[in-house]
Image (cartoon, rainbow, N blue to C red; front, side, top):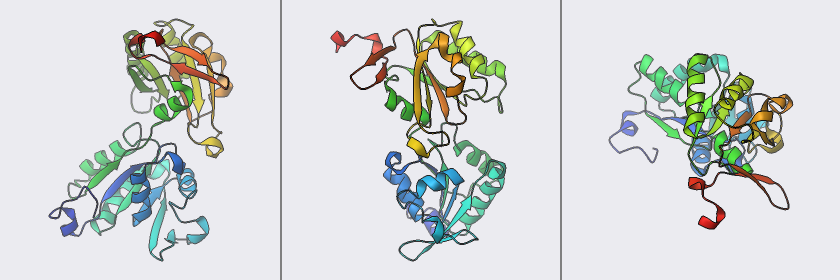
Length: 288
């Protein structure tokens, strides 16, 4: 029974729990203890190939050679755990399977990169639960470190003032709506973190440039928190808003995000590297 359960709730009804687990960047060092515990103890783990690789780094999931052809793994304590491969084209099918497993008493960990609520999997599973009339299914969200926070940590202190995230994916909403949000965020003085940058990032930068000066600092970061284990390897580039679209080679795919600063964001360097700093309230060092 999970910590969030009560004695007269789903435990007594013979149900398991569907956990939507955010694993942050993916490597164990940046995953919460709660996320690791849920995944290790789940009867079934649903995860993509990349996330399974990450979760085997420290034994959160059993090694690949301990998994049979039908996905059954034997854990170090001798108990069994089923590991199901997640792919983009199977999300609806896997949601239904997860509901069935929970009704059979299994605890299911549905793994999401970053945080499940930041362009992750939590909304899909709730929408599916509503569509499938699955009000009987206990659902718990286990938070994780999203790319904006992971990337900001490597860049210094760029998010210390107000910020927002905007996805450039036009799969679910039209570009007119995305443009409206970009313009509003730029005018309002938010530090902006763009997700899904392989789609329309040049177009997005062009819109922000209409409202924000070209010398505003911009960071392009890939696979934040993943080191060499990501799709393209972790790296970051600090440039300016006016020069951002000249860095196509640094926008390498799904793991790329752009952080667009404000007029208050500054580049500061020590003896080792460059950082971005957005002082809270625009304060100078003397104000602290």
